[in-house]
Each structure stands twice: as structure tokens, then as C-alpha cells.
Length: 130
Length: 130
DNA sequence: TCTATAATTAGCTAAATACCTAAATGTAGG
DNA sequence: CCTACATTTAGGTATTTAGCTAATTATAGA
Image (cartoon, rainbow over all chains, first blue to last red; front, side, top):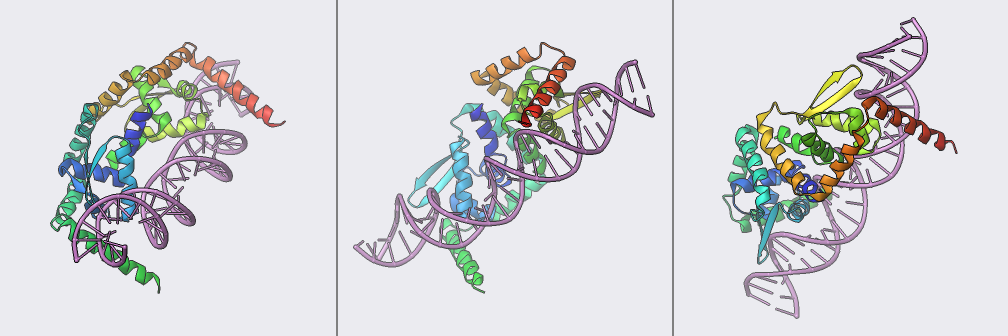
């Protein structure tokens, strides 16, 4: 039961559910893209993704400094659950809009995206001085 | 998305998942039976059940002072999700044992069960005086 | 080796949540 | 109407969790 509970818990946060929605549409996303999509600090994204990987819902692969995440399709028992979520996505306009915004953020490369995030973070920190 | 999230959240607590498991096996259970099964205070059970009803996962009916709960089978979109949970129950020995314990607790009537709970509560309170 | 960089971990805080007891509410029965 | 009783609501506490900044780790490239 602990395993079922951790799977469900891994999807029971707003941002983590958004990650799942995004990965149902895009086969694979980089951590920096997910960070951009969620609009939170990179550390927060990292924490969420770790939880989802540990629950067995996501998989990750590393390519140099870049970490990519995908839905874990290796476990067939999860397929009905992902189907159900996928169906909820299709029925919900709000989610579709959310994913449309994501699509727009994906037009630039991870390198460019990460640079923007760095600049944004530096800007916020310098404002903190005031 | 809020609706999907509240459905998932309603199942993301250990005791609430146990309620769902129990109601997948027993068509209907009374609040006092669920309280007995969960082993928590009646007020806690009430709170959990309310959340599950509000999420649309459970339904309830009142018969005098007795409140009965069932899985909400009126919403066909939830059927795949319940199927998935049901399948998890069948694959997990721990859950089966949990449900076996429930079956033993169901042999006495709600009236008797509630009386026991009242006595137990009074006993705990008198011990508190020491 | 050193600098740059993507992601993770550490440490902290505010918010959310599960649990309890006591009080209140709704229902039954004399 | 009053007493009994099943459940819910109120109020409070301990625990868990999401979010942040700073520090650290792992990787790339000169």
C-alpha cells in the first residue's frame, strides 16, 4: 500500500500534476524547461522531480549537465493511471491553456533558457539589496 | 485541473486510501464502521469522509442518525481510476490483510459498535485524570 | 587547473494537513 | 419536552510539505 500511496501522493501537488500533464504531451523535458514551465525556483523543481522519480512515476537521464525527465512507461501497471490523467487533460480547457504556454516557452534552447533563468535570479538578488 | 487535483488529493492520505479500498470491497459502510476500521477519533473520520465526498469520490446517505458512504459510481470518468486502485488492492497482500481485519470488525451491528466506541472514549477520558 | 554552468542538497520559514478533545447539531424515542 | 446518541464542527497542536536562498556537486570547456 505504501507504493500505491507514494504514487498517488506524487501526483497530488498542483505543480507536480502539471509536470505529469506536460510529460504526457512532450515525450521528454529538461529540468530547466520544467523549471520555466512551473515558474518556481530550480531547487523547488529539483525536489518535486526527485519525489516523482522515487515514486516510480518519472524516469530521468543525464546528458552532461542536462537532466531530462520522462514518464515511466516501463511499469505497465501505471498505464491505466496515466491514461486516466491524459483523459482529464483532454477534457479540461485550463490545462490545455497551461500546456499552450509551455509550448511557447519551448521554442528557445535549453542553453538560452538557462541563461535567462540565471539573469532573472541575479536580478532578483540585486533588488533584494534595496 | 482543480477538480482532478482534488480527486487525487482525496486519495493521497493513508487512511483515506484505506477507506477507498474498503468501499471497493464493501458496497456501503457506516461512518461508525469506518471509524472502527481506521482506528482514529470519530471527528477525524468525519473530516476525511467530508473531503472525499466534496471531491466527488464518495457519496453518502443518511438514515436517521446513521450515515452511510459508498463509492461514487455516478461519474463514469472516475471508473478507470477506481479500476486502477482495485487492481492495486488485488496485488497487495498488506491491503488484503487490512481488509480482512475490517471484515472481522463488521460482524457486530453499528449500534453495538458505536456503544463500544463510546465506552472506549469514556475510558480514555477517565484515564486522563490520573 | 581554473572558470562557468546545470542541477542538487542544506537550512530555514510559512502554509497546509492529520489528529485530538470539547461543544454543537440533528435524529430517535419515551 | 427531555434524554440519549451518531455525527459534525470548533479550536488547538504536532507534523508534514512547498517554497526560497545559499552552498555544494557534477560536468563542460579553455
